[in-house]
Amino acid sequence: MARRTFDIRAQPGFGLLALFTFFALYLPIAALVAYSFNSADSLSRWDGLSLRWFISAWQNSNVQDAAIRSLVLALWAATLATIVATMAALATTRTEPYRGLTFKYAFINQPLMVPEIVTAVALLIVFSRVKVWTGYSGMGYLVLAHTAFCIPFAYLPIRARLESMDLTLERAAADLYATPWQAFRRVTLPLLRPAVIAGFMLAFVISLDDVVITEFVKSGGQDTLPTYMLGQLRRETTPEVNAIATLFLALSVLLVTVFFFVNRRKP
Amino acid sequence: MPEKPDRNAIEVRNVSKLFGSGSAQFAALDRVSVNIRENEFFTLLGPSGCGKTTLLRLIAGFDYPTEGEIFLYGKDIAVLPPFNRPVNTVFQSYALFPHMTVAQNIGFGLEMLGKPKAEVAARVAQMLKLVRMEALAERRTSQISGGQQQRVALARALAPQPRVLLLDEPLSALDYKLRKEMQIELKTLQHETGITFIFVTHDQEEALTMSDRIAVMSAGRILQVGSPWDIYDKPAERFVADFIGESNFLKGTVSDIQAGTGQVRLSSGAVIRATLAEGFTPGGEATVIVRPEHARAVASGGQLSGTVETVVYFGTDTHIHIRLDGGELFTVRQQNARSRSCGFEVGDRAGIEIADDGAQVLRD
Image 1 (cartoon, each protein chain N blue to C red):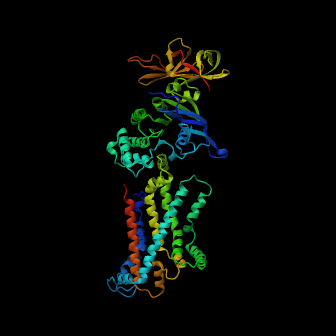
Image 2: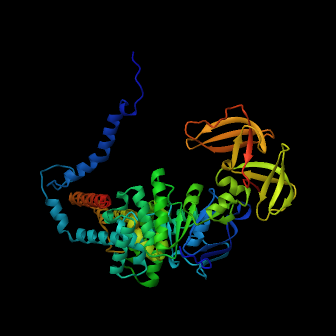
Image 3: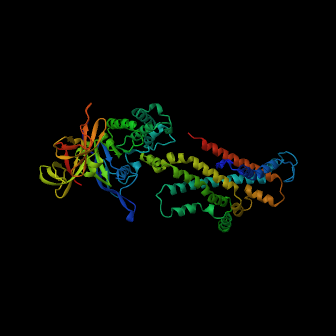
């Protein structure tokens, strides 16, 4: 019997396992998308092809409000988080390593490690107090909360890029009479741009997707799309949720695609 | 060349640079003082870790001295940030801005100085011409060769017309032939622009061929400053003689000192006459150096004698390694003549004749 040499690409069962994983991951999503075009009133019984629930979702003023609120919130949170993350990344990479730097990394990345529900409860307690003291109960709390947990997602790609960037470029700019701000504007930032965009996109999607913290922090009438959908599920569910989810998915895919092309556009 | 020997472009006074702290602290520069004259091609030469790059970084402003002062035309610049010093640098890695074209790179410094657009454009065109890169002005820096990048880096640093140009081993990334070409080009550029060049290298040949003056550095100190001829022919210390060119080192005791020369008794008992280095103080053991080209192998006679150990043919000349009767190995370099061997074979007895002023006694 011929002995077969070991080849990682020719392991029996690997293909099957991969196929299974693929289906396990995407079958539910495919089903969701398919059923969002269902004309029936039921979530799971197929009746025929129709855009009925898309139209219904589109015309539902609650959905409209929640969607716009989600997008505005994500835009604010991602923008603020990216600015803070860029500054934090500059501060933690453009310096000689010192005692306490590791602690700062951990501090910045804290939202990745602390269970979200803990942060949510903590914010609920603090913000409810602040709401009483200030009398303000607008979107500011949600923006703040979302910004906070979006920072590490924007921070990580930006820091990675800064760490791999050649420091002599900034030195050369300074040597050629650029003040620190000019050196940042003309040399560091243009080279950092792909990472800043990546960080922003990531933060945007993370904010768009958040349920737990939003659910705890939001005041009345501040439903985002995910919390609205969650609320719908508690009542009688219509295939409208499917349609909203499909649109949501489409938006995410669109963002990722745009990001991919923006990043690939190299000189 | 018009000489203005009294005018110093750069004066380094008692500069020390310490790195680390506690027991791990070490001095990259140890109370270094040196004057660099206007319009001169000045080279900092030494092995890696000798402090030459640190000194350059202090002059550029990328780092600040722990102690001491650095003057640029009489003005203390030691604590000025790099963007406030009329000094530009050509980096070892070139550090060209990858998101800009060749022309944008060259114009960057002038733009930062707030020069009007027309002036920047005119100067960029002039610099492109100077380094013969007109045809590639609109290329990205990633689309040009190493030698071309080198010239762009040079043009970029020269464009703002700095008082002093710093060059940090700029030729080390180039291959041999291109390096030779760039050496000549650099020297010509320096002559044409009249800008003071401070050049850092560990390559002694590069230093000797390009410099007006050389400072030889070791372990954070400057050992000797002088013209290439001074450094090669009148090395002040053993390290300088060893680092630059080849040398034979012989141990001996000095006696009968008169008019800058002395008798040296070697361990083999042979006695040779040698010139004494400036500042040599008699007493005890001394080292004598003899350059291989200042000695000749002879069949009989000569001040030293020994047995031929190896004969190495180099084309233009032949190196004959002779084991002296005192035990040391001595190298003699003889120019080759056409169709005639050097006349010695391994195992032959040979005498060594040292040229009249070929032997020198050095400070250790």
